Amino acid sequence: QQLAVSPRTVARWRQWWRDSFPVTALWQTMCGRFMPPPDMALLPGALLACFAGDGDAAMTRLLVFLTPLTCSAAITLRAGR
Image (cartoon, rainbow, N blue to C red):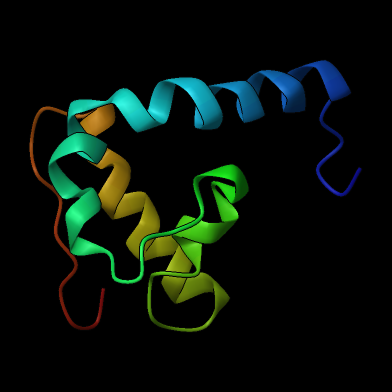
């Protein structure tokens, strides 16, 4: 409701996080770096909680982490950006 997204779209997003994300090369490669591991039933919120910072900073770090799913070039965070 906060984002005015249809329930059908939210269901599709949840299905992607539940079924598709765990089998991506990104997650298969990086999942061992999260200790404790996020509860896969609570994605993406559980993964967001793994990133340090306030809401905006943590979200930025999560989005940077996810960029290999959609970009061919690596993106990094630098101080002041």
